[in-house]
Image (cartoon, rainbow, N blue to C red; front, side, top):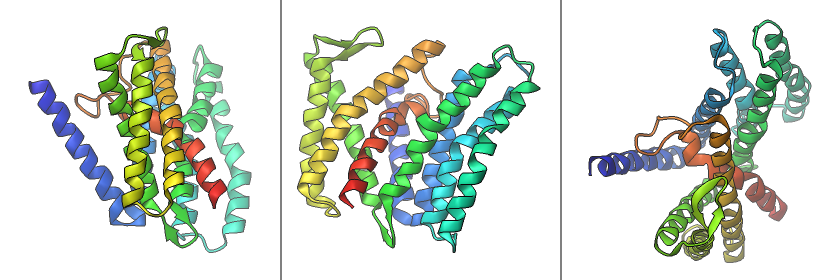
Length: 278
């Protein structure tokens, strides 16, 4: 019972912070996702980078800095901190690659037995976590319009999909979905989560009218398909490095990456669809 109350308390606090961060202003929205991005990157590198050298703290800090850079640059553009956006994009593009290559220089002096493994993980963190979260701003900001409720809707769809899959799988699940990676996931649960997601997508269009019914249903399908894959991908990661949770920041729920693994995988596909509509 104590564990259940701890999970519930954590969930309530987490939801309140998420809603407040997205609804208060554009600045709190960007700050919220910058913190989430940094937290997920830190947990990712804590799991994957060479933990047997004294210099690993700097290596993790370098990985987080490289991974969070796309979000910082996009936020600066979205919030209007840059007067000449074209020049800013050009300069950022020119400096981005040299910044990434600092990880190669660092590994020359780190005395690590696996320098290129560390470099590969740092670049993977950029593409697996950093770039997807940077795409959140492309969904939320369209010139002078702030579509934060679309991002909130995608988060809700992701959580509903996960909850629906768990409930249906617990009750009716018999056919393993991917036993090598996640023995408890079933086809019945995944289908139930997707159907729950579609129903919730219909309900969202009644409240969030920034986009129409068809668009919300397509986004629900995207979440139903790619959200589950994102969860499996993180399970594969944790199995490969031998950990149960990505972290312990959220008591009873694991780490930030455990909570956003599905959302991270949804963002690129949802962003591609939304930007295509625009």
